[in-house]
Image (cartoon, rainbow, N blue to C red; front, side, top):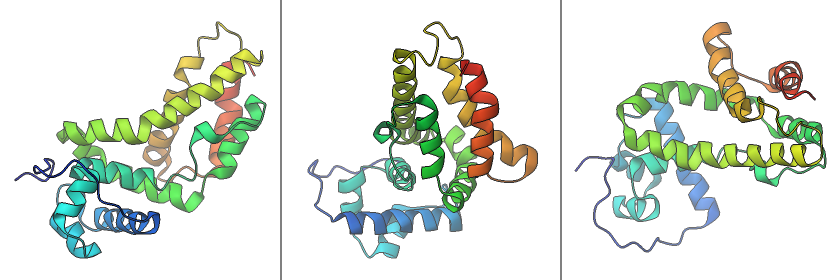
Length: 200
């Protein structure tokens, strides 16, 4: 059976503690760093975490979903939880909550997944649904409040491109300068590129 396809198991998820879930996610990320996505198997995850493969499938459904949720758990907070009362405050808070070491690890993992994303539509869909779309939705909410408060012009054409700017920075910096995005770069990029584009 392909690793991307779950077997027919009960749709009811097993109950595991948040601590156990975090442990499983960390094991998945460790295996990703060691062997890459293509060589990662549910059997290997089960052996590393001393779990049954059936339990993994009941809890996560498929390898792509497990990988996407493992990456998701590394995020310090959801952007939807940020609301300082000002647009600048929200973006600065986003930078404050970021972690240099974790961003470096995430960048390396995502670079390693680049080929797998193109080769596996299921992984691409899982990463978009579980990792990217929640953050883009939270960012859209921050920008919407900025428009409502009058900090951004209602007809500002750059608003819809802010996610592209930020994602592009995370992709371009390692390619162009062989280093990962850190807090200093992110703050400078927002102040120098994002805010001027928004007319802030």
